[in-house]
Length: 105
Image (cartoon, rainbow, N blue to C red):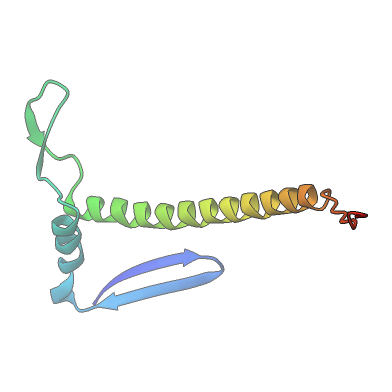
């Protein structure tokens, strides 16, 4: 059996899969995220990609984790900004006075 293990957040996580599936995840990530076996160097020469499909897969998983954390942070900051703006606007609106008097005619 192949396995992926993670120790994080006070948990030990193990994902097990049959040996004959060992290459499925890297191949799927390579296809989904357009892994290229060769890349261009700074001189525009084609060279072997220094990252294997497995390393590429690991980078994409880390990118996903970062994207989720980034999105949550942005959402929290946005919600806090909206709440602060709402309070400020309500404070300003509460300073509006309305007086209606009969016209004396």
